[in-house]
Image (cartoon, rainbow, N blue to C red; front, side, top):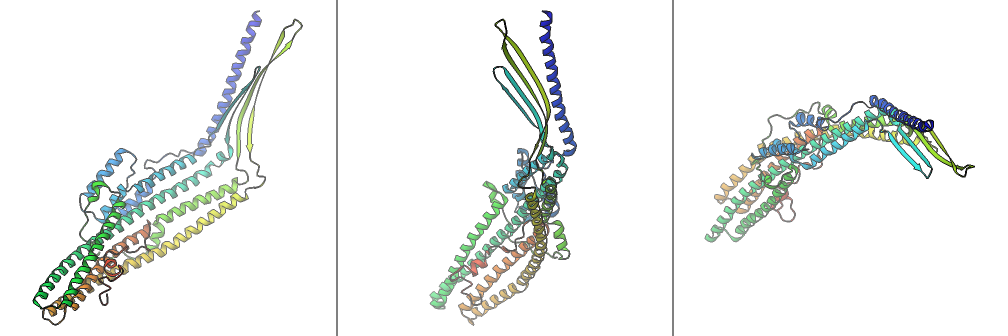
Length: 518
């Protein structure tokens, strides 16, 4: 009886030892996969700045500004405080750019997109995750337990190749974020010049309207004395009325341009009550040199850097597909199976004999996809075409960058000469003509019609001079954008006119179209 009592204990302890041994083997298999994967995967983690290192560098060196990723309340409060400090004083082109870099929500969203790309990069550098499966089936007298752990051998062996591919893809995303920073900075600067130009045009038209109002009042008084006939009075009144209509149109455009600037700066509430200078900056004393700007653009432009890293990533992917094109799924793992059953057989005494059976098996599993219809040709061909397409796009960007830099410099240099011509020649001559015409009118040598025509021409010339000065500063911004990236705005050069559009091209009988030679 003692023997029968101890026998089950002995079998139970043996089963426990077998289970412990099985668990130890599975642990060793998982540890082996991890041990192989860790040196292959390396130690890639998240960066402290969220991948904004290149963007910080371009902002500091190219723009002389800084950027902030608003990811918590402390950063949000700090950015708002800095923007509020800048908005207390009249904005300058530089302070407007800085406010946009701090407050624009679309830029912050692009920083978050970069954070998503960094998370994907870190995930791509990790070894393949083992898959653990457990199944248990049983009936009245049977029990079957199957356990396995497996991992992709292809992903594990190609991990050293996949890491540089993921890194180049992430670097491309970093320079795409750089492009977003530069594009916002350039557009904010352009819109600043457009808004100030619209304000300056409105201020000049208000002065002209005041002078025309005084002349209209004088014409009425002279008509009452009989010194001025009704035709000349009507011409003077019509000039005053037309000028008032063009001023109203210029004021509408002034408000539109300001709202565009507000949107770019990301302002709302009381922040929109910022102040702007009374006029555009004066022309610089020395122009930017045009030598070596093409080579500088090829070296510094953010979009070219993005295309380069994309090409390197596709080149690595092309090589990887050539290696793994035939077999791209190869999973290996460890598995074991435990079975237990009972059988009942009748005996001579009228009872049943119980027979217990146990079995334990272990081994390895391999999952392989057999390319019956495709032996990797389509994958390799697609990767090759993608790589060649990226190479051609990079070459196109390089060619276009050189052309854009040359075009931007020609606009920059030409607009400088045009602005100086207006300020040094056209405006002084227009003033002389109007002064002499006023003297001759006072001496009754000319009639009021000639005086009105000269006044219209002078107004038109002054508005054109303001817009020429605005276009020069926009051209300077475009030149910088063409050199370091950030969106070359050659097609939209100069923007909508705040004065000439209102005075010379608004459709119908406008002030300039009614002026001979206008």
